[in-house]
Length: 276
Image (tube, rainbow, N blue to C red; front, side):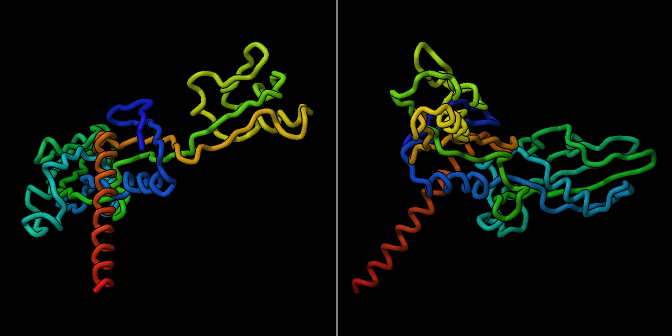
């Protein structure tokens, strides 16, 4: 199994996963979405709110603000030594006190831990007019996307099978397939049709080129065929900024490994009991 990156930065990763079964590719995708923990605001104490929004709407908006997460500094309530009471090891606290006229944004959230600040400082929360006031205290905790979408570290996380384009010797380079391709990945070079270098991953496997080849009347079978590689997948992962995309991938793979080890342990116990 191999991973080859086309691009990688803190917020976006494009890579090809090779030598994997479809089940593993989908498990990897689901783990990145729902199994990697991040911080998100869960509890909000509102001391004063004379804005146009109800308390519940404010709390909902605050919960959806991405927060920078240092997984080495925080643990979940279930695993924390405080037993979920809310100590600095499992809870990040924020305060906000603003009086209008002003557009309240995520930059007005003052974190107790500077490393757990909002990812972006320009996210609108509510607009206050003259005389309106908002005073709150919020607590962020660590959890996963399978509990609620606000804990998902990804904005986009998906994959497709890697396309394969085969051009037979019966191709007469008429160019119909080139004209029909919506992604412009084919070109006529000399007396044959070729895939433009580096454009193969852009193929959507729509097979319009195949239909154009059949319509040209050269035999019953098209000279160009589009298939999907059975064990290669093109992934696109875009994070919300709470974690670098590389860490999202590493954490997801760690979760899969841990679950696989636990399954192996349990099946070994069952096998041992059956032998007795």
